[in-house]
Image (cartoon, rainbow, N blue to C red; front, side, top):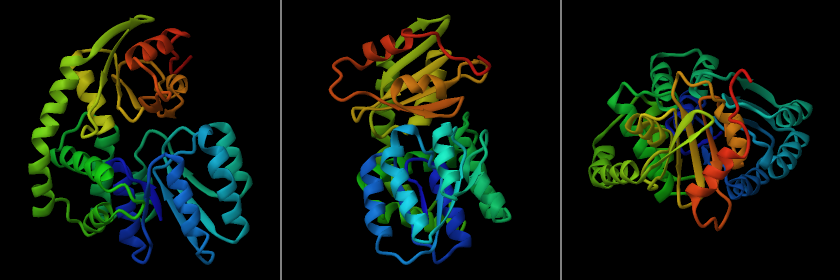
Length: 309
């Protein structure tokens, strides 16, 4: 089983799968190509089996890396079932269908909800799907969603291995219905002062710019801030129409207010990314000197795309 490691939706999806596929080996990835190189080495040693993928899109930028792997696995007799909620480019859909991957894609809902429905949706998996929805479609109503989102993001950075003991242990706990425990609380107690400082810095240092009648807030995020939550809190704090957060690693996140008609997935194409209409990821070019200026230039390079445009 392969799932997204960076947010609550990916971890909740993995937890639900683990709840019903208890013998499944867990591998947790982000979108960097090196993760897929690790998976290639691991799967190349396996006999043909069922591979379950959740909460990972297939952007065009990854096709040259991922498509040959998928074709090789299918030719060897693996069965791949892919649960996702991102907007897939037509070329990615074409490749997946051509080689026989079973796609379970539904936009507008978290991947965990798709997985939960696939397995029948018992009380534990349904609760995990609710938390995943809050994490990917803010605002957040439950304190546990906030806590888990920050803890998952923290584990992602301090334990980056695809078989991360911290994250796989968390998946195991969540799959059994354990949403929080003393160990998690101890980790959060140590992390909380840094989180508070990071949000204060992001709010203090943000810049605002108007492009095509939309107000954008742009700020650098410390790595302890989860992308979606950070962008949403910046949106709330600044009163802007859209918010863009970026990290020293080059990662980017764009989010819009619910009443704004901008298509973030199309907009993220300017930032070498994609995702959903309401939020999307991206990547700064290597070595960019002034990220804010680069982002503003990209925003002004073409009209801002709308959902119905």
